[in-house]
Amino acid sequence: MTVLIEKLKKALNDADAVIIGAGAGLSTSAGFTYSGERFEKHFADFAARYGFRDMYTGGFYPYKTLEEHWAYWSRYIMVNRYMDAPKPTYEKLLSLVKDKDYFVITTNVDHCFQKAGFDKLRLYYTQGDYGLFQCSRPEPGAICQHKTYDNEVQIRAMYEKQQDMKIPSELVPHCPVCGKPMSMNLRADDTFVQDKGWYDAAERYEHFLLTRNASDGGNVLFLELGVGGNTPGIIKYPFWQMTAQNARATYACINYGEAVCPKEIAGRSICINADIFEVLNELKVA
Image (tube, one colour):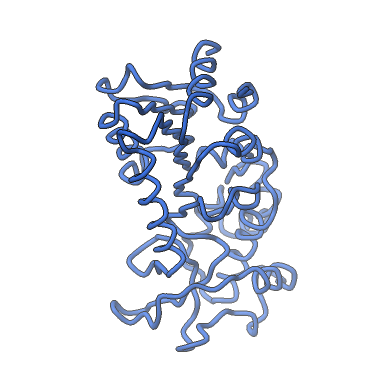
């Protein structure tokens, strides 16, 4: 692995632009695990009552009341959005690229990039944010507005005041425009709201690609971190395609158990099958 790390170190040094694509594996490497000890610590009561063995399962359960639904989700959001990650993986990544011309596209919704100090104007969260509410839509086409709302104050209140796995009824969030229950701004179905901030970020990302990934844009490093096979069309496949189309591009992938690339770009690829935190620890770019 030492040879691969040295190759990646050189690619980072030589890069005029770094385009980071981040998936769930990056946050897992930062300690945001959704089962095991961390789940038991924060959700032992839900596990005992419903038999849940991980946080994801509890998020999909059809609770009978909104009070119980938001007791679970407020705790889930506190743990995975407003609490700090156990390991400084994101901070280490920032230390490697902060002096580079970089941009981040991510399917993660835990906001770790901004909390670590990444420039918010260089971030494109494609799948939403645990820190945002939106209006729900009970019937197709009935959503009242394409707007999102910061939820930190409400989530903290729900988290602190819940008892017996329920929040007080007055804390159940409702849309300030139409009065319908609020939902999370997560791309789970066709109700997902792409607000102005989402479109602005998408436009900045597209502009970055057009200007930095051009034939005269210098050396480009596509750095893919922890991207799995659930939504490869958002990051993985485009990174492969753009690397193939640009002779001055290098593709790097750090992903424990899933570090692969197509043969067409193998000569300009660096695939490291290891924990991201450990690899970032070894990367000290001059």
